[in-house]
Structures are given as structure tokens and as C-alpha cells.
Length: 210
Image (cartoon, rainbow, N blue to C red; front, side, top):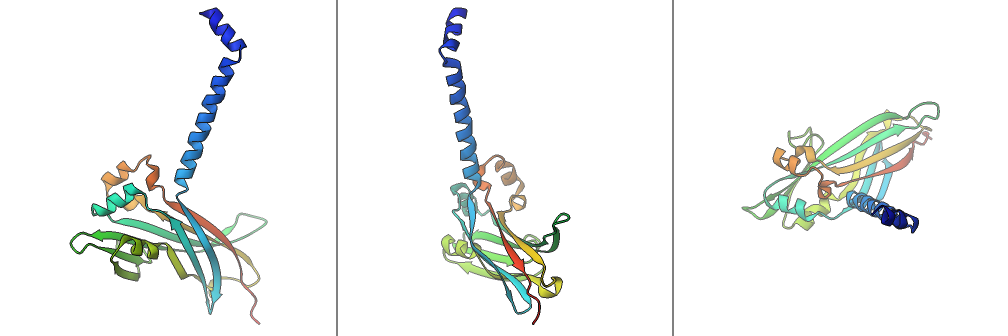
């Protein structure tokens, strides 16, 4: 047996196995990264309109089957959209100037077979600090189309920013697992279907008044 093993090593069998194992690990890791990158941000832009900085974007994702099944069982989903305006400083860490957040609650109503969407400026579970949208849809596709679209969302007032200063707007979107019922939170551990998140960044410079 010792002779056979030694000959196998000399013939390159062991390095070949190690290369195959390493390749398998890399492919598995790449698949995991791809599965976790289940959403994307497209057409993200930041504009100054009147006295406000507004952000618009399209969020691209497909709802995994496991998540859709939970919806059909009456489990509401909570999506969080966040935007931070950060001042870039070459001599120190960047400084966060403003931060806004809104929560979107999506739920299926079995009695009416309709989809209910609530968008609030605060935590959706607690009623939020300001209702932005309360609407019903006939299909899941119609409801998700509204979830995926952010149009002219006010993220800051010009009075909070300085002219001639370089800022950047950091935009984030995610499915908030922490607001699911506890049994579902436990069940989603290690399940990449529930890792729904995306982010984008855009520069912002406030022009000096004429």
C-alpha cells in the first residue's frame, strides 16, 4: 500500500485531486456569491429640484419561489429603502450628513385575492412616521412593479448641504428579514433565497447660487 501511494504521488495523482477539490470550492463560492447578488440597481440618478435633493431608481430582481410561497401563506414582506448623503473628506473619514429611510410592506389578502402595499417613512410594523402610499393590486406582478420603482424620493433639503462641496449619495435596498415572524427568521438562516439586497452610489455637487 505504501508503494502504491508513493507511486501515485510521483505520478501527480495527489496534486490533481487537490486541484479538483480547489476548483470545486471556487465554483461553490462563485455560485453562492451569484445567489446572494439577487438584486440590482439600474437607472439610479440624483437630482436637485427646487429646494430638495431627490433620488430615482429602478430595482431589478425576481422574487424567489420560497419567498413567494411565504407571501401566499399570509406572511407579509418588508422591504427597506435607505439613502445617505455623505460628505467626502480627503483628510479624514467621510461624514454622513443626512439619512432617510422608508419601509414597504407587501401582503396577500386571501379573502379578496388582492395584494396590499403600504409605504411609510418609518418602521412599517409600527405604523411609520408618515404614510406615503396605501394601495391594492390585482396581481403580484403589479405590486412588485411599484416596489421596484423609486421616483423622485426626497432624500435631503438644500438647506442641509453646502454649495461647492462634493457629496455622494449611497442608496440601498433590501428585504428586511428581521421583521418576519420568528419561525420564518429561523427558517431563513443559510437560505440564499432570502438574501435580497442591492446598493448604488452617485456623486452629488451642490452648485453655488447665482
